[in-house]
Length: 147
View 1 (cartoon, one colour):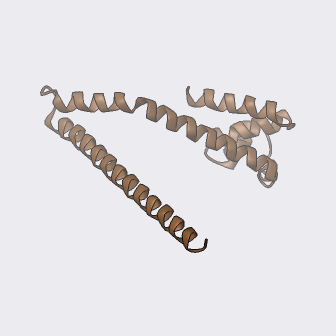
View 2 (cartoon, rainbow, N blue to C red; view 1 turned 180 degrees about the vertical axis):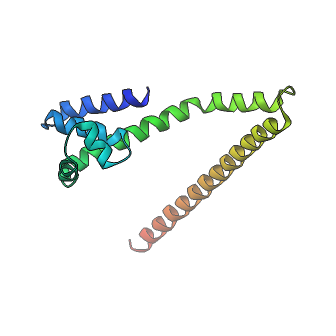
């Protein structure tokens, strides 16, 4: 789903879920798709003070935060879905001797760095699991003492 489609879908979902007017929905989409409050005001065809009025409303801010989180979640899903393809492209570049040596080195470095980060993440996950297990055992031991 492209960025505009995500924003449109979020705007439609927000409109259906809340009793806000179309100007608020238009402003919500503008805030998400522009870089500044001034640009959002222009895109939504409202005064900049109106933007700040809505941003001070807790219910509107909750909708805005939810919409931003939806966009980030969707982008994260898209990246995750395409990681194997990206890895394949990097490996193709890395192994294709017709490519410039610098391009092959850059691809190899990217593959190496990803692998290194993956190993670190796995090690941290294992360590966290061990710590959680020790904490559970300690809690069980303390529960036995107090019984």
